[in-house]
Length: 247
Ligand SMILES: [Zn+2]
Image (cartoon, rainbow, N blue to C red; front, side, top):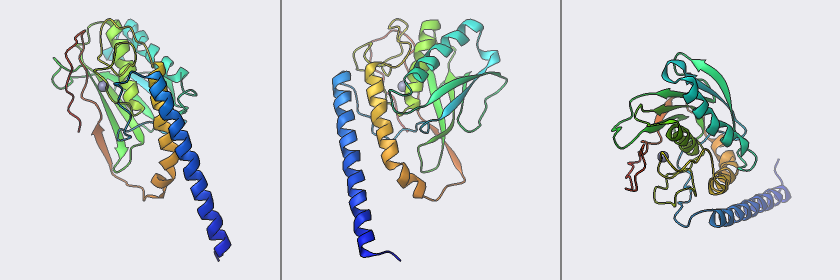
């Protein structure tokens, strides 16, 4: 039987949790402001992200990439794993080897070549699968068009698409070099997350922790729905802003 004193304690505890949560968000908002270009967009938590502490198994379709290209892909994976603690996500990527076809297993990411819609404007696409009504990634495919011009752009494209895996949005108007979420260029040399990206992802995962209890209360859905997260980026050095249609 629930007593009145018990109820009051629960309410007090909930208020305390809410206050602590608000304080954590305020701190990370300050971190984003300090680390980012003023034009950077705050994450609005509508994009899917890997679950906290996930060890993501990465497969690369063997027929699609040569050894040099595989090395160019593994660099940004290592760089995102290296900030697992700093972002608060504790998400790491473990290369699980070549594969003949995409691996749609829990916490699996397959990197593959494919035709990206309108590849004159867009060159890479992230396809994340979530349970309908939720935004925790079950598995994902990173599709890279053959128009990606060189190894530097390939590294940059993977670093950028992994940013979408952490809920980050594009910031094509951001100053070059301040975020990996800008235009994919053949020349800016970003191989992984910047200080700004780390601060933003920290904010995303503060939100994930605060609201995970709410998600757990919902009835699990059996039907998974494929959600196209990103329609791709400009493959070459170009200052023209790209309008990316969001689903
Ligand atoms: Zn993008």
